[in-house]
Image (cartoon, rainbow, N blue to C red; front, side, top):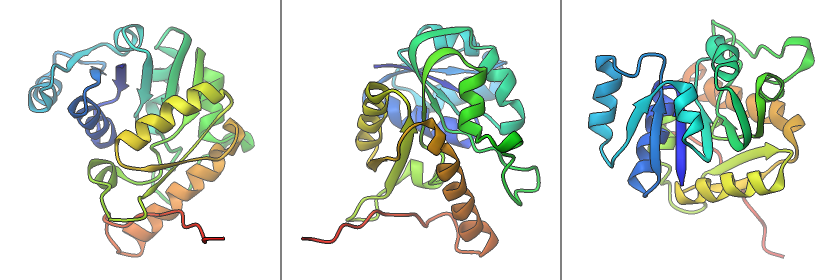
Length: 212
């Protein structure tokens, strides 16, 4: 699958690298694709990855992964151009600058805001809850770490669920994009435990089922 990863911070870098490792065709989208830092990421990742401007990465891809800092997310989304039927995976969290909470402006989740800013596309909220360290290595044994996701298009949700399984997670569909606030609050809980309470980034959430 052709996948564009918009953003080359820790989350974008890890997701792009892992998706390329398991055989997907990955292009990183960056405002400065020829910068030394971005070229270094491309070289270190290998597996035929490339880099271009965000709009170029989106145009070449079937799935676009949005992994930008929240303060730059609206500009990044509006700059992607017409997305048509592409799947846009929102990995962002609308964090306040001091990480003390979430910016749910007007009562809208970050995922709902991304859906409003996007020109077309099928929006799925996912990959925002476990932290970059767990995206890089989700192996804790059984059960697998859970990957909550939500979106209004069932086919798009299924595509993202398959990607989550390939990366080693157990996907859990949580409803339409209106459920994005639940995922963002779960991410806030993870940040609080990992950083606020000093547990460190090697912690995660699993979904347990009782045998009937």
